[in-house]
Image (cartoon, rainbow, N blue to C red; front, side, top):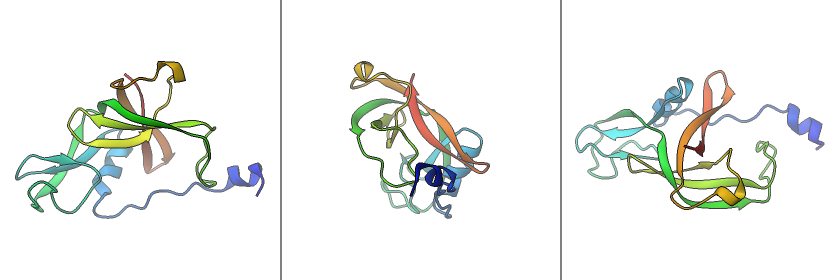
Length: 140
């Protein structure tokens, strides 16, 4: 497949299921929404149908700040499939969100020499289509 063919193929969109629907609805309006337990007030990611803390199914979606700190990172030197339209190397980070959960995504807008442990970051949204945007992080 040529680079031109790859760039004209539609990018896959993450499937929307009942368990992650609130997350993707938040992406449409620029809110990072995570599962929230009404029983014990726990917030977690990735989405699930019950609270990992108390096993309650009385859950809803809560908009969180999208702020956090870099815990770990890796520079990826290979593109994994045609859907990943990125220049290599690209940076993957594990962010510990201020509200507690960890989140893995890409980090954009930072020079390699400026990257550091505990770097404050903020979520930003990259539009995938009219119904979905994907969260990435940038230095705060």
